[in-house]
Image 1 (cartoon, rainbow, N blue to C red):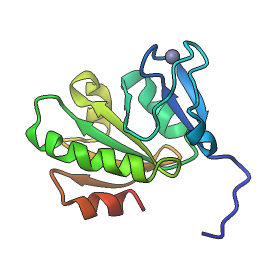
Image 2: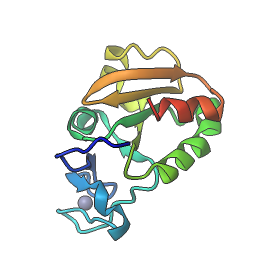
Image 3: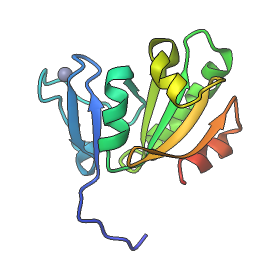
Length: 148
Ligand SMILES: [Zn+2]
């Protein structure tokens, strides 16, 4: 990649501990950025849980692509896919933000995006859908999605 960007790579994500939405500089991911409200660290090498309230800001404000896993706790194929998603979050930390949204707790978002089966994986860039996969797809298909 020879592209140079004026804007830093940032992710706008809710704190896992207090829920405060923070803008995190992904160039400093190794320095364990902390929540501006409660001071607890952001764990950016694993999927970040978002909810219906924080989802829109996360996909619209993050300058890196956001891969969202639309899942549910009772969904078997979602559990199968979870370790693959964890690995992508770890390997692509700072390049792609991996987020998880519990569809049972976000019915409005699910309807608006036309999610009919779970797991559904959607890659967003600047808040817009770039591509999606549905179901327990092979790991390489999910990795390819995260590179679109
Ligand atoms: Zn916090």
